[in-house]
Image (cartoon, rainbow, N blue to C red; front, top):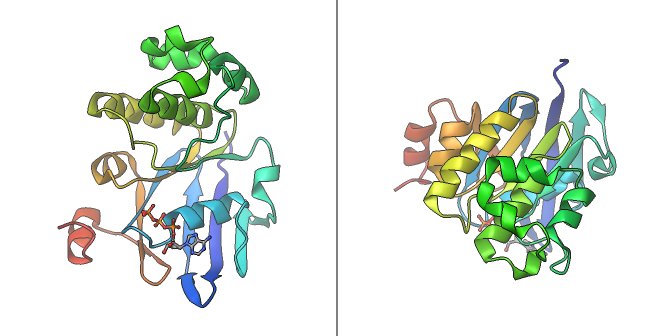
Length: 220
Ligand SMILES: Nc1ncnc2c1ncn2[C@@H]1O[C@H](COP(=O)(O)OP(=O)(O)OP(=O)(O)O)[C@@H](O)[C@H]1O
């Protein structure tokens, strides 16, 4: 299978006179998981939204296989994005959501048999954690080349996080996965490459992640 490469650079984002992003370079290949860490408010979610194309900054360059894309989200088989907050309409049933995202319900159930009973439930009637898990799987198992995951581990019990790590590992055989989460251990376990977003709005490619995360003040 031919490798595809997603790149972000020249991102410039200001809210009013506050600079958020200004010196960004990030690269994800299919077959690879890339971690994105950073303290609260450094701009990780903004970066992911700009990469997806739904947030426009003062400038941005998103390229796939060296070709510039102005609205990446419009390329249906290219990439999908898991936002931090619920995004599936709460009155939609799980089976209908699967259909909309082109993910067979059996695939969800295959990884998490306990989701089997929710087939005809409305998303909004699930527990917060179950809803988050279903939404994360819808994105992760989508038939696309790249997935952007913003805090996929939040709201999940540790045992579920561990199993979700396995799903990410399996999907990263063919997809490029950009993973941002404060649960840094799973991020470091899974990632082939790790970037740290440091103030003001600059990505640093980490050579020795644990060591550098300590001396840069991300870890205590
Ligand atoms: N619409 C907006 N208007 C003004 N400021 C905003 C807006 N959206 C985000 N910000 C600011 O931009 C900064 C970056 O926010 P963002 O959510 O991207 O950070 P983050 O690194 O994802 O944070 P966290 O780890 O806490 O989720 C924050 O200081 C936030 O307050």
